[in-house]
Image 1 (cartoon, rainbow, N blue to C red):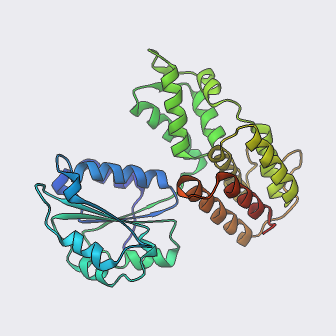
Image 2: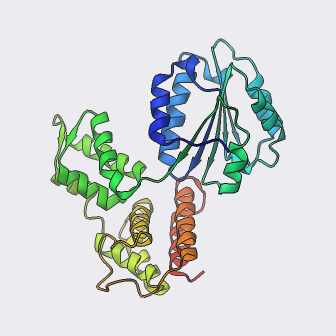
Length: 321
């Protein structure tokens, strides 16, 4: 199995590469979709800089694609460009990897092939990584730890040409609990409200992000952790009626459950108790994170109504289903 690198190492690699210095194959796996989306956008810009994309970019989805078609496109010469770019999303859902495996024995120097298998289980991740040539780059995007989020917030702010108070960093890190895409979106809202000012204060963040129904969200998290499904669903319905966004609810739930899994006190406390009324096993914790990841994917790219996604998530977290 080819060894994976971190998102930081991947972006260092990309920064060093010009269009003709990119690797012929990339494999992206893991839980943090934000890093994968950023890497995909940056590589696309580098690989196809100045090239006509209609003739040199092909995107496939594993559940619908045939490996032979992906390999054939990757082997096709670029048109009026130095490189082709072929992207296979949901690579772990491809039914037969035979032709991809053959292509990877000698990948075309005129193509960049990107395989994405975000959220794939370890066996499928291993099957894909085992096929990679030495020239390939394999990045596994772990979800950032809570202690890493403030630094990421600072980097996002600096990249946009702003500075920010420590209190503002702490507030947005705690409130949005590690959902980087959501943090970036909320920061952009703050930037737009500042006018000519280039420094973000804590009051700016509080005004834009708001208190976001935090006490009720913590009640929801506590009820689910205690196995009180009816209370959890009732609290969820109230939050949704009040206009709270499902992605924000998911961000805080994810942050709280990460802390509970680590044995830490979650943001907002335990609803007045010292600990959840229901002792969760390692298996229950693993299933909870699977449910949280599934809800994240569905909210971002599924036709299922967000309300139904959240209701099912809360029932699963509560142990009711």
